[in-house]
Length: 217
Figure 1 (cartoon, rainbow, N blue to C red):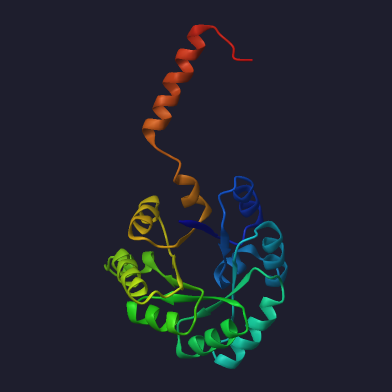
Figure 2 (figure 1 turned 60 degrees about the vertical axis):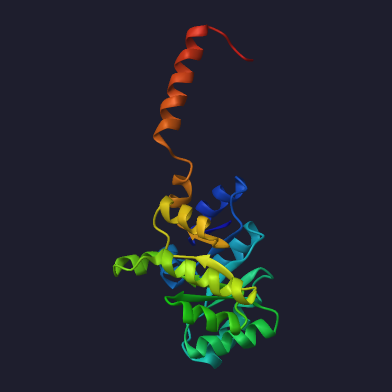
């Protein structure tokens, strides 16, 4: 599974990139607002740090506007992935932009039928929102399962990018189902390494090593 981090915080991105854990980055208007910096400046800086896909979302809601903005965003760096919403206009923009060689992430996916349309439109990534479905009392992982089956049935190349991930368990389940990518907040990505038995075991080893009175160096 590939790991993307869902943030526009360049400090967090640099720290994770240094560990070799990042395969890409996703941003959205809400994250850009939180960063409180010009979008083009943020995306350019992220693309300098991360070699993999960096999603930058359009603001327009009509196809012509999305295409124009998408072309503008794609000029920032070769690894920019233009992010469009899963609407008819978004699908039109996806078809045009992918036809021009631009990576496209179709976002706000909440049904398998939507994911099927996105794949047919040539999407590079489809972003089903797990957490937001969970909020409605629907198991978001069921959507990942359905999309995986459909894409495998027809050998679609669109990658399933599990989004709206809120816990380490979400990451585990998405990986078990076969999602190609998980985009996660920095806090969730860092939590994957945590386990109380690891902490307890390390405390015991450290204490016992001190008792030996030895030094490795």
